[in-house]
Image (cartoon, rainbow, N blue to C red; front, side):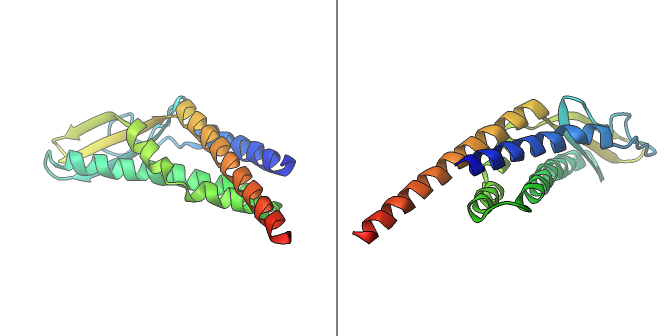
Length: 170
């Protein structure tokens, strides 16, 4: 169990590092016609920006694209964090890490907790800009809760397997 606790701690630490490290990695991008907030990173939130050409209905398309980009961005962070930790993991730790990636609770969490921080339609260029965000601390707390939940599930699975093995020996 010590190995599982260590890998869970390492995973949480790596996720936090990726989540908050992205603030430093963000670029300062300027696009003609784009609002000043477009593609800008926030210290307290993880955000994604998108645009869509067209009439005012393009705002809805840009909102959907921005949410999809946010889901992908969080998913990519999870994959990177797991890959960073799986290198030297034992078989049971690998199962734990892989189950972390398979959890669909992230998508639901992002849908429920993300918000459109900025929406702007520029008539001159007929383009809609949207920035969708998710609170970094809230996401980190959710990830830590998921790690604990998965640790418990794996511990119960191990216990059941041990009992089955004992019963098989009788």
